[in-house]
Image (cartoon, rainbow, N blue to C red; front, side, top):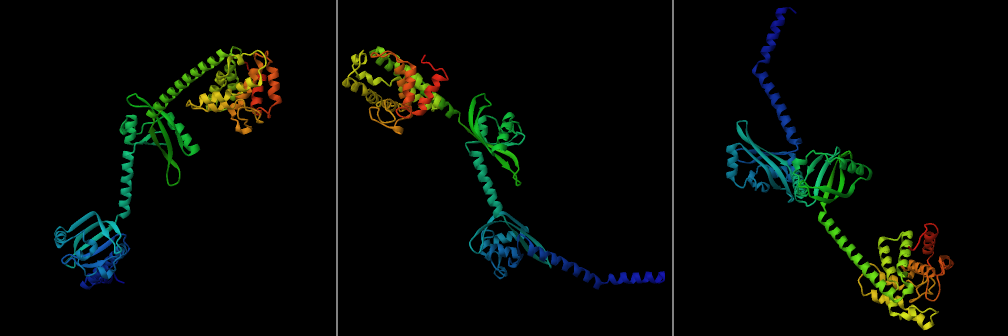
Length: 467
């Protein structure tokens, strides 16, 4: 084609495209695309959209999301004026408020409550804009459901209130040992403001705590601390991991409770208890000395029995509480002999049946004296049973086997061994060998086997002496 014809064809084409008909068609296509985009936006959007006539306030359109949100049908919305819909009563209670919207062209509520058709309350963010369409005014209201956000914010506020007002210190520490959070209770306990400790390292404690977390999943213990003002204290601490969504530990948080006053009270109470115990033992020693003054031949017997009984108890692994009760019982186990005439106790020959019956009653006498005294250990019962035997041949109650307390079984063996190894008014000392023969021959019959074995080990392997 000649160049001139090509030029004319192009000009003709340009002329045709610039005709009013072509322009109209382009605008129409553009408008159609815009309407399609808007329609899709309204139908698929995640906000409720309400379209009003700016002059009358009548609802002319509503999108599916708002219909689903509030539970009203499309028909129930259309044609009604804004303020006629009950759910909007709190937004625009009268035409005056709508008039203000018409004048200002914009209205926003960050939070208002709406009520759905079935009476459920939801919180929404409400924004209205006025714009021109086809020469007339249109109001578009965007309604965003913020119920979940409000609930989350309320939960955060609640947790923040607890965090701020809880009496226990809460401290968040990263894996490097740096303090990341420090609540007001921690400020009160340790005397430092959060700004003073933020990103400060807690040093050796961090390694100890984090290693415990990795091993056991948590760490619990007591910590000594020094306040900013130099006052020392003790806190009871539990530390737990903070994990991300992949279950990786990203930090730890500790809950610390100040137990300084409780510890001081406990220590004061322990000191008082220790002092009371020492006074009690001193009193018991005085009582023991009193009975031994009436019976010079058995002077020191109760003390030596106590030494052996305590050694057996330690060999057997008795608790500290059992040990203390046994020691006290040993020191006064013959206190009941205060009711026996001195001439019987120091009689050089064999005693008769009547005299022996008086002596046999001494555990009961001692029990009756001690039972009126409030003690932290069952001393009266231990003393009462120290002449009982496993086979029931003992006195004063004829108890058998497990009816006899462990402490009483120990005291029984220690009493027999010391008595046979020592001098008595009616005979010379029989020696430790005969004492061993007596307890081993009657092991499991009269005497507890475990107690006998522990006693023999003390003398044969550990070279026990009464001194």
